[in-house]
Amino acid sequence: MNQAERAADILGGRLAAVSHLSGGSLSDVLRLRLEDGREAVVKGGPAPRTEAAMLNAIRASGAPAPKVLAVDDTVLVLELLPDSESLSSVWSDLGRALRRLHAAEGKEYGWDADYAFASVVIENARNDDWLRFWGEKRLLTSVPFVSADLARRLERLAVRLPDLLPAHPKPSLLHGDLWTGNVLTDGARVSGLIDPASYYGDGEVDLAMLHLFGAPPEAFYDAYGELSPGWRERRAAYTLWPALVHLRLFGAGYRGLVEGLLSACGT
Image 1 (cartoon, rainbow, N blue to C red):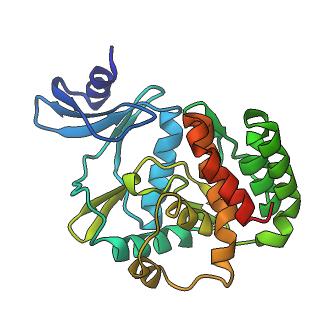
Image 2: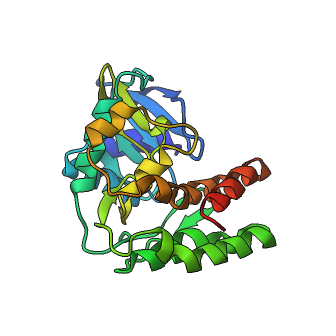
């Protein structure tokens, strides 16, 4: 039984049509229609039940995300949301949505389960020490998978984190993989944040991710609200994590990005 058939089965319907949706670089994403007219989005991924819990947490915060319609160990079935595929008019709404998301607070940093970007494991064991969490669970986990010179620079950076990052930021609920492709839009509003890799941590992590391949306009920051002094200087240490993920998944074309961020961190 394939993913679409399995999704129809756990929805209690019969499959009428299925098509591929754009995106889904790390897992197939399908749109299905049942014979009774219901439509849904279906995806697999490393851990459907964990992703479902993340989406439910995002929705509980008041930020937009698709409803989880059904889930088992192999598929996640989601509400089909509108998407105009343009962020040009939604930056202010995205800022407000992230402010709501980051207002949801955990007791510790991390998440209840590990996760993954394809072959890259995301270690989420809870910790009350943010510097240790970021160093051990986000930077040093890449040491065995990069060249020796990059590994040494990462090790030096991990030692220097107390000079760069706050020791005890509010443990905010993070999306965890916030790039423009994971933001669905409907006119001037965000209809949903999708494909999360959520955990609790410094809200600046999500903002840094938005700078990996570009930069949000001022309207985004105006809507998000006040940030702690020094956030621009901290951004490189946070952007380094998704840059390392890209290096490990997609190869040497991202080495220059990683090197530049390490240099920006003074390492």
